[in-house]
Length: 329
Ligand code: NAD
Ligand code: LMR
Image (cartoon, rainbow, N blue to C red; front, side):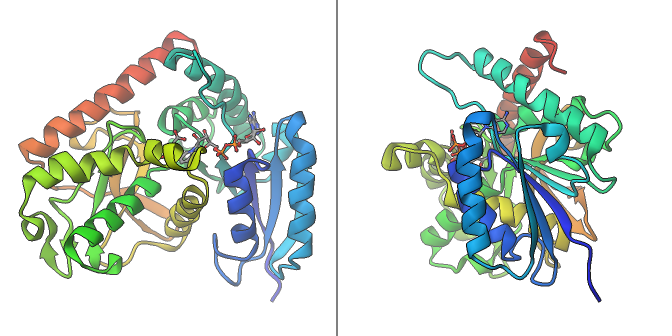
């Protein structure tokens, strides 16, 4: 039976994450080895030529699942019929730019893209925002798409989740695959809170296995939360292949489900769970099944975690208030 290709739109397609992402999508790693895909690449006019070059390389891979590539600088065309949208292109912070300037510049990108998704995307659209500040950019896009169910707009904290898995595995000598139920709470920023109190390592509580709150507070949490800056310092450019890998993981898990007894971390619209203000796009522990996700309920939050979740949520509230004042939501 011939399947209809899934339309996957990638913004910022000519950027460094785009280059690490597109070949994996076209090879079937995003949606599955039996799912044909059609790519829509959105760039700004200056990025179109490089996007065309990437498309030539995609052609040269002769991927059996790749059924078409369209390149455009028009969001209305790029999101037409989109089933999955990866919003990667964003305005990077440049010298002398305040956070408010960054939010305003990105509002100019994510508001029209949200509207184009609202007006043109397929009914089953799933959106992942990667471009920073990812949570608040997702909030802006979501606000511009009132006809799309709010839960379809998500922000990426899977990279933070994967970083935390490896740090914990390296500390304990466990395999990453032995670690379950780790959580990233809050914002994809230095205030994020990687929580191991509910995590398990080969079936045993992770925090008890580590048994070292000083390591947790002074090494683990800052290493994970500031890893993005450490990569920029070391590489001279922000994370790209690992960010693309996390985007693949995020969508693959959303579409194909979490394993029994495990969960993942996604930035999703808060329903007020765990005291996170309703409507914020904040990272939570989530399970996924049949293309839908649910926030894991009923976890005990100790004092150590409460303070840190609250601090990150406070930052999200400040970002929300700033974009509200700018008329972006
Ligand atoms: P990059 O500068 O290499 O590429 C960005 C691309 O986006 C450029 O080609 C640019 O032309 C394009 N672009 C800009 N505005 C656009 C618009 N309006 N429409 C379409 N395309 C547009 O950057 P990168 O390294 O690929 O990173 C992209 C974003 O991802 C940055 O904001 C970065 O901070 C963020 N990021 C997020 C995470 C995360 O975990 N959430 C991790 C790493 C990087
Ligand atoms: C990352 O976590 O690697 C990035 O979000 C860092 C950045 O500022 O681009």
